Amino acid sequence: DNVHKVIFISDIAGVFTSDPKINKDARLIRSLKVDVTTGEVIIDDNDDDNVANEMDVSGSSHAHDVTGGLKAKLCSAVTAVQCGKEVVIAKCCSTSAEKYIQGDSSS
Picture: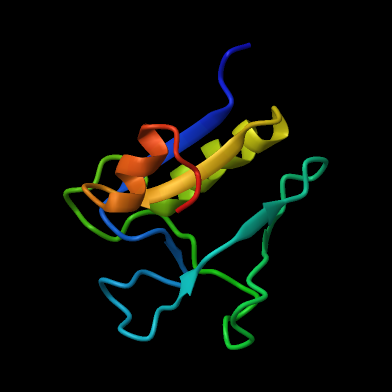
């Protein structure tokens, strides 16, 4: 198996506590962990004690979005993690996304 990392490109800068396009108070979650046995997604954000322990990961609220939004990405990400792959969610056209695609994981 030559796949080591799965990269999801999004129109927002990662995973937030809720949709930042709708909720101005949505907070970026810098790190998530997945329980590989149960598939439960757990917020692992030691840098910010103010991040809630729950996320609103409903499907996309945008009528034009046919991808399923964050919920679909996280479901696919859980499957990848359960298969032993590292997962990154990055904003399209960002420096971080470009670095990850080029193989630099220091972002």
